[in-house]
Amino acid sequence: MAGEDRRGAEHTMTVRAPVDRVYGLVAAAEDWPRVFPPLVHVDCLERTGRRDVIRVWAVADGEPRGCVSRRVLAPDRRCIGFRQEVPVPPVAFLGGRWEFQPVSARECRVRLWHEYRAVDDDPRQLARIGRTVVRRARAELEALRRSAELGVRGHELLLSFEDSVRIAGSADDVYAFISEAQLWSERLPSAGGAAAVLAAGAWGRTPCGRGRPAGDGRDAGRNGTVRVCFPPRRIVFKQTRLPALLSLHTGSWLFTPCGDAVTATSRHTVAVDPAAIGAVLGEGAGVAQAKDVVRSVLGTDSRLTLRYAKEYAEARCLR
Image (cartoon, rainbow, N blue to C red):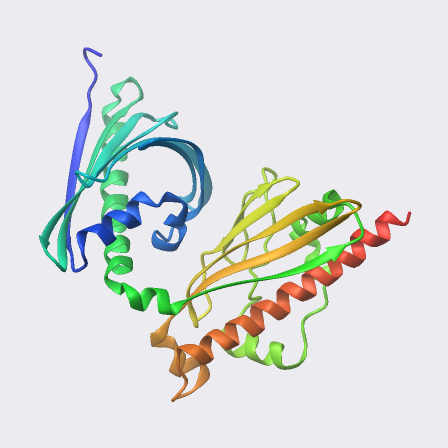
């Protein structure tokens, strides 16, 4: 449109990783919460050939926010274009593209280009948007570099697991119990025994990241856990203030009706921080031992929560 004041910002970075690996990390949007720290959850809403529409939830300025973006993927040219579907004012337009060029078999150059415009072309808002774009682009490139350069080592540090329980009750009641995290301190006793000892040494706060849900179901809870709720079947979360032993903790609660019952499942994906293992678990401890500790602590916490959710829902079913 004539008269529009669109600005551009270009950022580049050299990454010591094969170009296809780096391109793949950006192409696989559903895995972005593992790569980019502010991102909590990504859903693919549409996918047609090399075009998709994704909804992204991220923490911005201390608050969880969602947006929808359209992307065009060109793996043959190693290029990904994007634009926000409905920008949030004062942003009137935000789009751009990722470009990936091989430097050698083990190194590539990443270029991230943004184009943006402010509502009514307000120069002060335009400057503010520009500063935000620059800050986020630099952070995204650095996060992408760290993840890509870990390579196989990054996969070795990852651990995913789940615990499930069958409940003779309503999925709505089980969902309500889990979503009402502000009541957990009253409904759930603290875990005891070995798990409590491990939690005290390795975590410093409740490992599952129990928080206080906001009215819209998204939570930046007191202990740094952000949740996105999809009633009555799913709650996803990401812990943003991590215990010493972890560099990543994401997960979900799933509620699947099965006839007159419901299967409630707690899922976790974590990444162990190798630099912290010695300080937390003692000299000589390794990644395998750290994963065992994580599985024990988070599993104990999740199973306890599921147990009390079961008691709550089944008691309500008998009324």
